[in-house]
Length: 250
Image 1 (tube, one colour):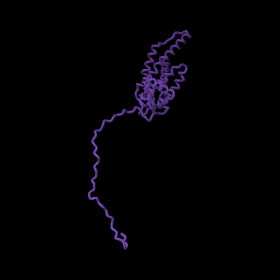
Image 2: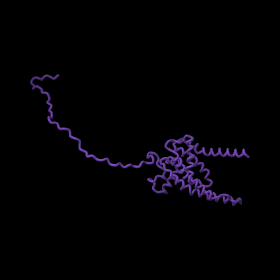
Image 3: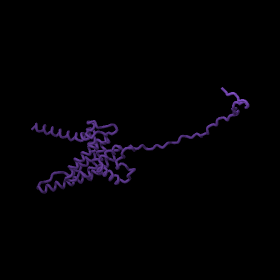
Image 4: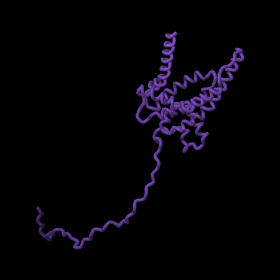
């Protein structure tokens, strides 16, 4: 309730509210001229996940322009961090660079191995006074054919064995198995021909190859070992069966 006016004071008046008889209309938004949408530049998609490991140095031309530098970086990675090399294989997909790396290292190593083998055979024949038997040209031709088509045939067999043991995961297919075979054997060729060390080096390479095959496909290590041992076990079983069958016919 309003308070009564006190005596002696003028009566209070209610506050006056002044209204603007002519309010300003709202200002229109600033006029923007129509612009045709410009063509957007399509950036090439990256061939590997930038958050994961990069590609194999042999294929990383943007970071390592020189061919010799890329070759040396790949070889160094294979000897110092073999499993790291396996992690980088799935970053890209083309088969040709990996196959060329395999041939680049395999050709001189194969020729050197054949030459050392022929020299050893000739030396043993001279000591034993027996004629040498062998055709170096045929051996060289067979080795070259093996270098050319071996990665595809052996890679397909290993991939099938890995699939049989449940180690093939979605996203990495047969081409990644072949690529890993090319890079792994491309590094091994550089030391696999050394006499007296070839056997222990072959065993050590088999261990790292089995682990690397499992890393490429993101599966358990035992599946990688099982996949690499399966062809050997099958060949042994076939050989024993053939021997028993042949002995039974005698």
